[in-house]
Every structure is written in structure tokens, then in C-alpha cells.
Image (cartoon, rainbow, N blue to C red; front, side):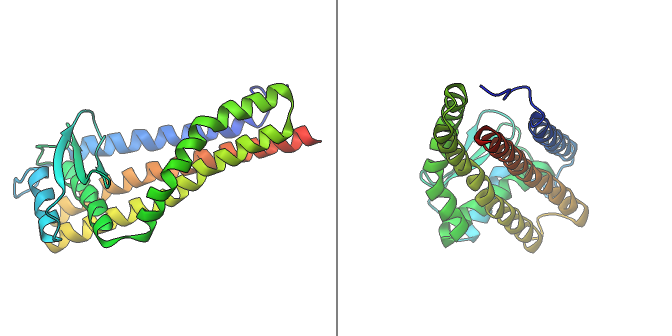
Length: 229
């Protein structure tokens, strides 16, 4: 078995981990900063989310509370918009920005936004790649079977492609959120800038996840080529 866990290509994994750590710290710090800035209209996030959905002609999406911090998400299959403990009930600029972002996903779903459809279609492949790629890769390295290693790498490609598809979906949802908040004059100028910073920091976590996955893929390809040599 090659020195998979000790060779020079491991620096790519460390770089990816560092990028992800910085992005995670940035979004948490930015959210924490603007979670202390209250919107001037004093409307809680779930009420603004309901307002946005109804104005978009969406009446069949439930809004629920979910445990955790920044665990917010929209489930298109269930038609449920879930807001985390740190967002639900809050009137902060950060919370409303996040809630509006999730409404952006619901609007994407209603409009049949193509990248969202593609992401939903790719979820099963990404899940298969996430669960099976590493066991197959490690087994291929242990046994010295280059074919098995290549199968594992191909499965990992599904994960990378999913991360890539996710980017336009997330960026578009944030752009929709900002446009809606601005058009409805739910925020003052400074509050809107705060929401933009929160959503930008959140978007960068997806960029970091993609960068980390690509670096890992490059490492795997380098190892595979070295084994062939």
C-alpha cells in the first residue's frame, strides 16, 4: 500500500481543511455580529418568511422550527421551510436574512428553477458517492487494485459535481432574498448591508466546500497516477 496518509499530497487535504475552517468561522462570526442588530420594523423572521412566501403566491409551504444553529433549510419534497433556534422568533438582521434566503429556495422550487431541479436529481448519486467512495478507495489502495481505486475516485466525482451544482442554487437564493428585502423595504440601508454580509459569508462556506472537495479529488488522481507508474 502506498504511503497514502503520509505523502506530500496530504498538504492538499490540509489546505482544504483550512479553507473550510476559515469559512465556517467567518459565517458564525458574521451571523453572531448581526444577530445583535435588530430590524427597525421589529418583525420576527418566521412572519417575514410567511409574508415573502404569500407575496410569491406560495401558500402550501409550512414554516417549522428545527433544533440547532444555522441548520435552516427548505425541503422541496416535504414543502417545509425549517428555521433553526437561532433564527426562528428572532427579529435580528441576521435571522431575517437567513429566513429570506430559505424563502428564495421555496420560490426556486415553485418556478422550477433548473439548477435546483438538477441538484435534487443529483442528491442520490452524491449520497452514493459520499458513502461508498472512501471504503472503495481505501480497499483499492490496500489491495493494490488500480481499477478499484479508479471506481472509488469516480464515485467521489459525484460528490464534487454535487458541490458544484449547489453553488448557483445557493447564490441565486441569496440574490433573491436581498432583492425581496430591498423591494419590500423591510430593511434600512445599513440593515440591508448587514444581511448581505451574512448571506455572503454563508455562500462562501459552499465555495469552501467545493474547493476542499476539488483539492481532495486532485490528491486522489495524483495518487492513482503514481500507483499506475
